[in-house]
Amino acid sequence: MLATPNKFNLLDIVALKTPLSEHNLLAGQVGTIVEILAPDVYEVEFSDEDGQTYAMQALPAHQLLKLHYKPLKTMSNTIHQYGKGDNVAGDKIQGDKIQGDKNQNDFKNPTIGFVAQNQAQATVSNLNQTSGASVTELMQIISNLRQTVAQLPPDERNEIIIDIDDVEAEIQKPEKERNLPKLKKRLLALLTAASVIAAPIAGMTDFTNNVMEIANKLNIELPLPSGK
Image: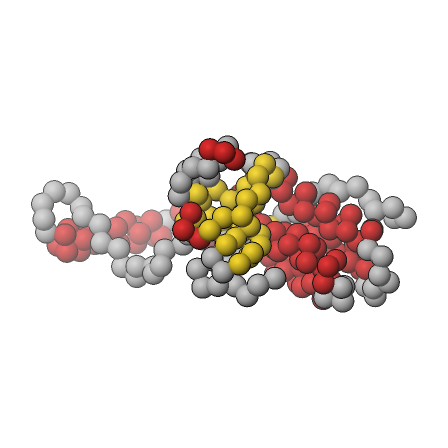
């Protein structure tokens, strides 16, 4: 695998700038970079909402646009205009005062304050928990998989690493945005790879168990490996 250039990285989400009618791909079609073939040339995988790959194309950088899901810099203070007129700062002060008075009145009511506190705690919990497992726990299991795969010969290791990278990328997304069919497909691929590896590698049994544990924590049903 070639060194990663500055423009795009593995697993970047990209979109086509121009259509490729010969490959039935439209401008704006979204894909994932799965391999760096040469400087400014990338292998892009296009999958549907069920995680099924429908195209794999080698594409130059000038045909791709990297998609971003976070702003470059978060504004510390957002000024909203209240009412009409051009006095934005004055309107903001008045609006903040109204909002502040409202918040003070709300928390004088113990029931409202209790509900607000519970909602805040639930939000924090949702950010840290996913289907019975924290992202931190899942990432530790991913790390264990990588340690085992690192013992494999390069020709067997590279394809498995791509599947692990895809699983990790999906796990890092907010839970509602994860593509569970794609996760199931990648986890099945890892189980299959573990069953056909010829080299006697220490920890392959643990590798299989770790894949099954990820599936269980994400509530994804996988067939039990042979011999289980």
